[in-house]
Length: 337
Image 1 (cartoon, rainbow, N blue to C red):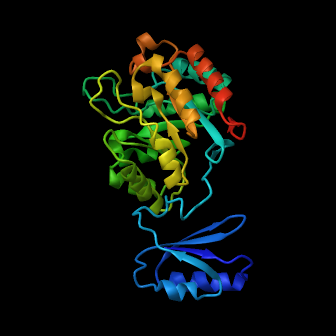
Image 2: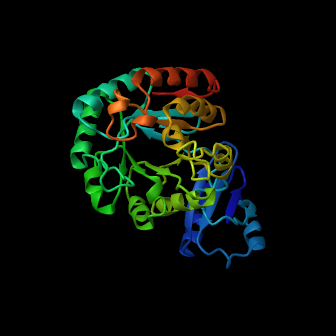
Image 3: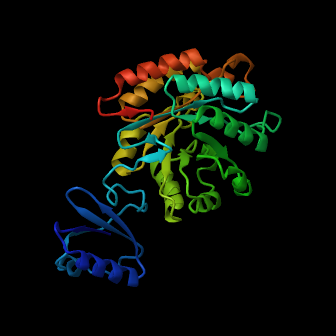
């Protein structure tokens, strides 16, 4: 249920309303905009009489919400959420550029790439320390050492780091990680999502291989219901019958998601296509359809990459893509710090 309050209400009225609702065991989500204040009620509102609520002097109107996701719902939070990590922002007209290698291989490799993508305007460094691989014989990542190398690259470049978590037991290793990524395979790992709801740092949540938009938003709700509202959604392609690309990039999801939620949504054209030559056109299309950012794989020597070299851009190619993306963004958008 959503309560839209009258303008120029008295603060005492607001305090009384909030205390009364909390005493009824509702969780409240208050959003104060320029023209109105919205109070979202989370819990079983079937006992509340709509007419009675509308009769209160402070209440302008009452709306019941049919969607199962509440905290992530734009009706609860009309203004766009902005994720801010040391001045690097995503959402609310801020276009975030996240770039780096699929997997962390060495300090020299990582720092070389980090410097290059920063020069091209990237505001975040991505890199896989723990790698979920289809084959148990494929490179699984450097794990703890990989995170240490990411932190070393951050110390050298100042770029906030983004890396993927695989299991709740790894969480202590992520204490100094700026943005924790939940990969497509773990989008519905609900115990992990619940635990991340208690973490005070942004969570980059990727859409599952065969997940609907509502399922993605419900996974975000798991995190937000725990108290962590710093969620970034990521469209990374879904599995279809088409074998020409690794996945099928569902760009129609971007404007749909932005209508349904206030959370920022970015696009991963690298995993979506699996083909380096397709990253540029899909990046431009993502920017044009309203995405709040891009996460792109960049490697200084793609043919010899230990993971996903076929979809990785060279630093030179990434610089070209970043320049073209900036050229088509709306004038109102900001990129970088």
